[in-house]
Image 1 (cartoon, rainbow, N blue to C red):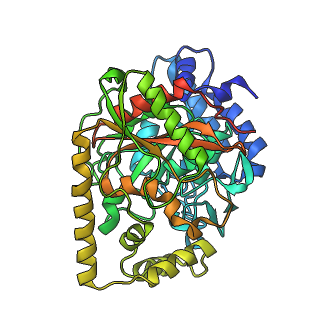
Image 2 (image 1 turned 45 degrees about the horizontal axis):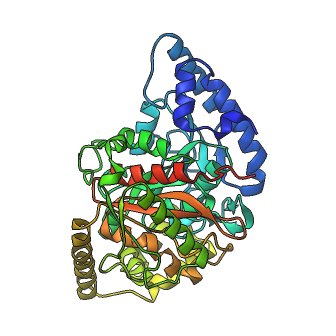
Length: 461
């Protein structure tokens, strides 16, 4: 494999900046890699070869004149197919948008392009992002690059699969229940769900807003934690449209002193029993942090053991009626089986206005129960899911294995997943690092230490 495919995006930016490699060369290398691996994993659903090469040549020409757009000048990237991209097909995996070409970029896409990044293409999702595996009627399913019989996860599964395969160094996903963290865990890469309200969600489809708006965030995904560190200040800006963005300062993980940290860890949330391999991986991470001088204690936040039922209720409290109306309005009349499963779950849980108000109160009470835990600890280390990557088509049969990530969507706290182990079958196992609201720097510093302590192979094939 070309050595340029296994370095970080930050290193690529440095090589471009010092003119040791051109943006055009990097883009060509990645396009060649996509052509090699994509027939096996089906991760990139729209390849923007000519447009990307043209932009790369523009970035190189700018640099020759002393012009740099920012920290990602000339660096190739990919984007989840639920984030709109100007002039590039954006389907969200649903037939009614199969030929939809937006006239603008999503807020976070615009920020990455402003910082100099070059978009290689769009990556696969479940229909309307409503599943923990990536499969739809337009493009089919995305395979896990470590085992093609298993899912790469969802809903940012295409993004995780192509990054893990070396076809892209960094990308954008979104996370309402674990949708950047679970694919990262399944595929062996790093990803962060920032604090709720940190990044603009403008241009995501399904659109932001409504009852579930606080559940989710856009988040970067990469092979290396240092690229998440580089991306977060670029992305954590208001786009002047998304009113939910709160302009809080982004702190530098390099300023975090590990031996000052009190860290809690747990291996079982009491809802879905983890595999022995998962327990071992989290315990190893706790031991590594203890060796780093952290104070490490086994402890679990009050209220963490919430089943997936509450998440499903918040996503579609109207029994899916609004979702069906939306699908009809865009011309989708045939649904993928995973979306049909979601609608069946939603229909069975339709509720009255009184019940909905009670559900919102329950959610607020849960957040209130959980927050005092952070008065004792700076960070939490725990599983990203109860198991490694699961077989295709089984995610809705075992929703509770995803409650390890869902809990922190309820809380709104930032959470990073970093690869730290492997199963006996060779599948990646990540650990999840959670920190205080607005203290992504702490979670990133801990994750970066774990990454350096036990490097794992992050490029499949």
